[in-house]
Image (cartoon, rainbow, N blue to C red; front, side):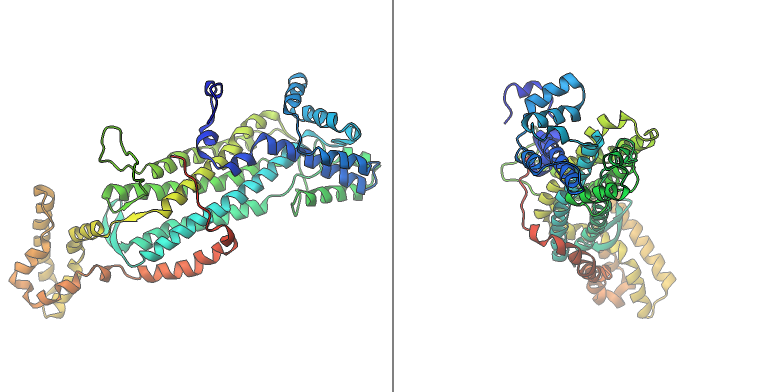
Length: 481
């Protein structure tokens, strides 16, 4: 709970209300500045290994102070210098007097800034992927359980042919499976900026190593490996290409689109009273209407998903206006847009996990909706049965057309139930097939291969994808309401 003084300041709801501790920490100042110090240590170690006059004592001193950051001193230094990196160089040097001369040796600000951003992006994907996998696992279990439960399908949100509850869930799953692959690809395609100097030419390091190009290249490789990356970008300006941010945030925006579609479907089905998201025993749906059970979790997902999608405009604009080797008009924007994309995706997935762990299905309501529409859908089957019994297709078609119009009038004009079946049963013309009507109107005969599609899709596309995430599959979420 924030103190009284904090209540006088704006706090981002993404941090104060929604996001997880691990994602919040991933973009925190503490992690950022600790990572800066680790990068300075990596650089010093690699420079020493390649022959620069750096001592073990200097490196040991830096390592002993890697995490004890005097934030008050750093803030005061930045106030004076108007430069965040140099403020932290001075702060680090203050507690490492022996190592002070070699901290940040040959580097530009983007050595720590951009490389730290790339680490945060990589780690952010590693936080999101297990959460997405858990959502998929819960939905897969749901799809399996309801693989053969017939339900009314909709096109244009108008009644269409039947599908099954499980098959509909597989439509959601297919989008999320694509998102897993997209997030994995975006993470695995990330490279390190590495050790490139002020305009990406490595000139300062070439001077440090007295023109030895091989050592400069080895320095880049060593630091890249220390930071946990397999490759560095071979060419950069002062920064890594801002198209990298586009690639990362586009996968998150695409995830946002998937979640918005899923949760919109859940909201529509909640209105039909066919499916509900979890609802706590003492939860209040409305301050004025005590009977309401609003789908507030799904609504939250849709609300935040819109923000996630909208953030996609930032990296597109930023990449397009980077002049030559770089301009600084990317900085303030990226401080907001990059963290917010991951923070938003994080709470969306946590909320969706909560929803998918507690989805409630009401088969009787679903059955009632099917009964209202199925007689219309079964007319072709009835025609076929009459023809097999020796009747004329065109004659039967006209009989059913007239009866269907009469039944539709009862539904639309009188507010009654669909009585087409009763009209058919009363008409002597259909006497030859009356004994077949129950079988002709069995909902399971209208769902095609939906159950088999569910089984095959889960076995071939979903379950194998979840294998790498098995260790994190049982984690529960603490959802703030």
